[in-house]
Length: 484
Image (cartoon, rainbow, N blue to C red):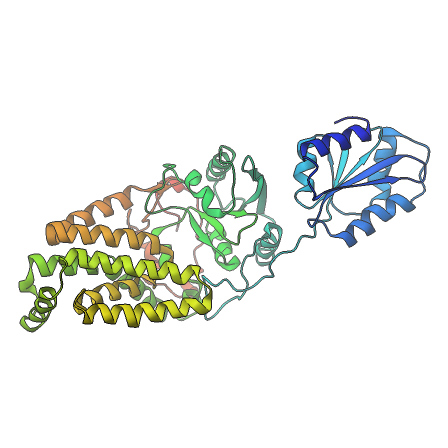
């Protein structure tokens, strides 16, 4: 940066191409010296800017000192804001003013001050629609990273809770925060995640999902991921106490959790608010629905085509009658129904809520009923796909994986029958057992199996037993996140 205020203003205007939201307020101090305050329109609180920056500068009596001495005096005795940072490069100036800070520059000195007067508008804290609970907090993360950090700190009044901020995205310059509990999360895991974030060479980051491939061990877009996601502060705090690491991305309410286990997709905060026996029933229902959503259409095709003798005589006659009156082979019929359902689901998601209900009614009543009556698809086939689709909603976190795997098992069952489903199942299980994140096996603690660690997987023990042992990540390479 230059000593001349005019040169600094000229350079900043050149870098920003004189953007309409880049504002420069030049001031003349009471001792005759020139200064300027740089802000971004809409990112700063005007009232705070006037009270803590502009008014003190214009009203404070100043000596005839110039340069560094006057700059230090203003820093220490004039500006009344609690967050003031010295900066000495144009890159830092742009970073701070685009984050809502006001930057103060004095003629005759080549350093500036970034003053915290952030005041941009953001959505209020509300319950996340994707993670509704019957019992528990109604607060969810919003798009402002600092607010999200506050929601975590309010629940975790632990001095060992650490936040580290980074900037990712060569063009978007998105701010993210790494959060973990020092001493609970292992240093090697924190260093590994920190290095992966620093090595991220992506140009823009507009959502938490942009970072997931860079945090995976393999660095590839695989079907299953070892990076979890949540919009609930209480869920994230619970994971932090187990030694996990959270990644908050500015501009999105979704917070990443690493490492993330397969069994955790079947857990919810309500499991820990209800009685253990009810939580166990709920979890078993979720696992059953998950398996049904994946296997049922493929198994239906395999049994009808290759093993019809497994059906009762009355039922197989009805199925054969429906197949005989439809023009498509059974596998193509299932794929057509699944395709139509996915089209209606996308339409319901993208349209306004009022029209979304109309789409679901038309799809379910008109298209489905008319297709069966016209003999295009069979009623048993439609029922099989409908059951699978309904079950997939029980575990919404795994919906993308369920959709892909359901299609894979449809092809396996239609081509090779039950043996094709068995072979594909073995391949999927081997893949899941070999997948790890930060050294933690994805399907841990099912494999490597640990009786102690199974206390909160398919069933949940009571709090009196769970609270006797601390869930702590001490050795991630051991394949389990729990220690006795």
